[in-house]
Image (cartoon, rainbow, N blue to C red; front, side, top):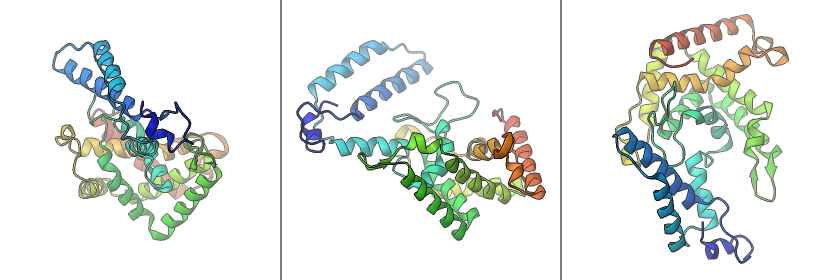
Length: 275
């Protein structure tokens, strides 16, 4: 971002300090990628290098002073889901590979065994997880998430080191606990799958992007969501050594977990989803 004057007021007034997040650059780069892929699907050729040259000229002639340092951070945080509270962000993290990148839209823009989801599924997923957890258990996990953020806080930036936090075993433990509650709720898989689809539909906000309005949340998307949301629990189940789920759960729980994954994987394979 070339808006040095806007950023300087929030970075100590140093001359020549630019927004390190480069939000306008990211927007333009993602637009070019999206436009090229969309054109390719229609059989049209696009000179990507020429577009990038035009974008560079645009940034030189439009300093975009209206986007301050904090505005850049807020824009990227919203696009990456970092505006969510700590507990919600930890729960939503396993879905990241299925969500569109900054500026992207749902759909198979790249070869993938699973369809991409819209970020509009997040309110419904979080509501479903809170429903199966119950208020007391959800509050305990929320406090654990907040303590985890405190452990990984970077005082100079007044935010947590999220890449490091997400590698913390406590983060995986929180995700496993939430996923285990969800799995226990799926004793009647068909009925609960319909319930999940209804919850996500009921909580999905309107599509801000016109290209996303045709996207729908059906069975295929719901199964992809379940595969991703329960991935931390699957990893714990399959882990060797002291982290193995079997060492922390009774036999009846393990039967429930194994039955859930067997049912989920069979349904996913039937629809051509990788499991």
